[in-house]
Image (cartoon, rainbow, N blue to C red):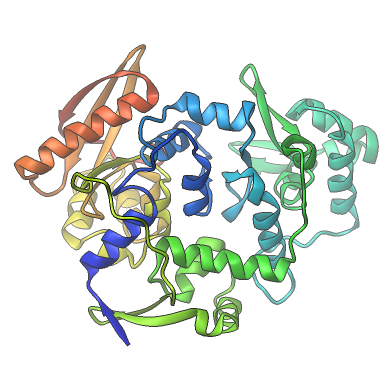
Amino acid sequence: MRTLTWDEVWARRLDVQYLARPARGPDLVEVVRAVGGIHAQVMASAEVAIGLRVDGATRRDVADALWERRTLVKTHGIRGTVRLFPADELPLWLAALRARAEPGAGGAAFQPDARTRRVIDAIAAALDGACLTRDELGEEVGRRVGAWALEKTFPAFGDMWPFWTQMIGPAAAAGALCFGRNRGNRVTFVRPDQWIGSWTEVDPAAALAEALRRYLGAFGPARPEDFARWFTMDERATKRLVASLGDQIEEVDVEGWRALQLRDEPSRPEPAGGPARSVWLLPQFDEYVIGSHPRERLVPADFRDRLADGRVDASWARRAVSTGAIAMIPTLLVDGIVSGVWQRRRERKRLDVRVEPILPLTGEQQHGLEAAARRVGEIVEADVNLALGRVDVRPHL
């Protein structure tokens, strides 16, 4: 059995996710492809997550890839959240999501019945050749299937939403809708096959196996239960999926922790020069934090204790460090390990960045932090004012 150290694991994950050595050139697609899509529930965070991984990229480049060149597409994806995928891989990921929802896979509670299928079909029909806001799409769905689809039965954000809105996620998985360009401050929806201009269906079982390979490529070594959590899939079904890959994967030992990785690990060319980065300011919902396990290694014990100490929402902070909710906090990453938290406040062209390191930074790491803050400012196109101090940790900081 191959043996690895944790330093090797962190270095590998950072490298394959383009954090240690950001990609060069204007194309963002390969970076998004490498991490299995980018979480985009908060679009400003998605812009920073991509920008950190591509030298010189700004939020304008992300917008250009989404709305002008359409090489990226925004839709509902893994874990039911809004996500950015390479446009040429959208059929692959949607097929994997459909396979996960099949009986026996244990990946989703939703199973369409006659009424919900009618709503999904109505969404697809309404968006044929059209770009509609949420309200406009709702009106079209109600006209096609009846007023019952518009009844407010779905609790969300302290209000009740119409029944049909529960079908937005399933409709996205079915390939019936994705996001179009915003109309003012209102989101719009379009048909993905028409929006990206081409569509080739992928076998769902093959797509699900490829999703596992992609996860191991970005976050390995990892355990079956780690993929199950990332892809919201039943652990028993995940173990069967792992077994189906046979000798494509291997078990390794990381200082006593047994996990799996791809047998033929892809490697990136050695950098032309200069040291790899060691300090990063990751936005909330960054893929590195979402997908990396085990949590007790990613988030050291002294960090967990200090994060929950005397916070405004200490109980939430204490839970966050032991679950995936840690990804909801913008994090300071040092050599691949969560080592602090940060926040940003924008005032016109100025970005105030406050960082709270949990452990003291060396002089070299302090210089790295200053560079990391400047890079965030470049991405969002603002002048940065960096300060160290207490950060109020709370959900969706």
